Image (cartoon, rainbow, N blue to C red; front, side, top):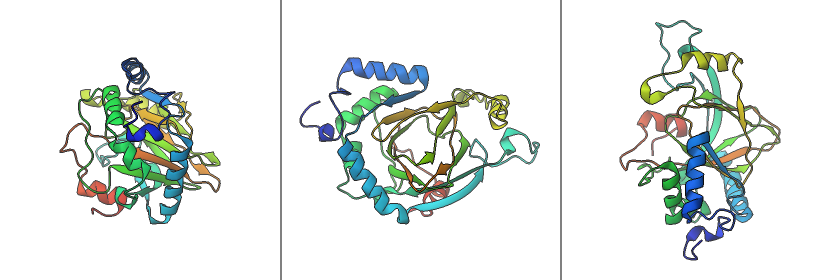
Length: 263
């Protein structure tokens, strides 16, 4: 990795040469084939420790919410039966630390802004340019979950997510997913398979990752959840939001739902 890269002290470049074309192609192919890319020990111990300490200090300032929703994160349909996947309730509860609470000198900001890291992600995701959200809340977010919290089954609204685990819980907090359940672009909502998953009759995969790993996940068509956290240690995950268009934005309603405020 070039010495002028800000992330040269945050990323294990000897393991993950993100500037090399062959490495980029290998990562892109894995994401396209598997729907998920996990780069083990991508970030250094030092940056994970610092970010984890920052997260712990901000936990009390997180916005905590409890929500009952369907897997599509949309309104229910009264014209359908209560057992239809559109009307099946699932529960999610979590805390979110908004971008504007994260220190200006946090290494997370250096990583997000680094040209080499962005170029690598853009290639892997097949996007020419990557843009942050225009608001001050959504671009770099830390999700925290303490004992008893979980994320219910759902599809993401964005094509891909980029995350880094800062701290694993004592137990639970397992990421489970079922790939290619629906085809959102084709309008196929995958009702039959969604019902299978909700009824516990569909095999699920477990994604194993550790603090320091970089995870890129295609969650728009993959049904996924995080199981209930157990123990006194908080599960904390950084979510880095990269958008394809500069005008991409969250609605005011979404901002209130996620952060309890719009500014």
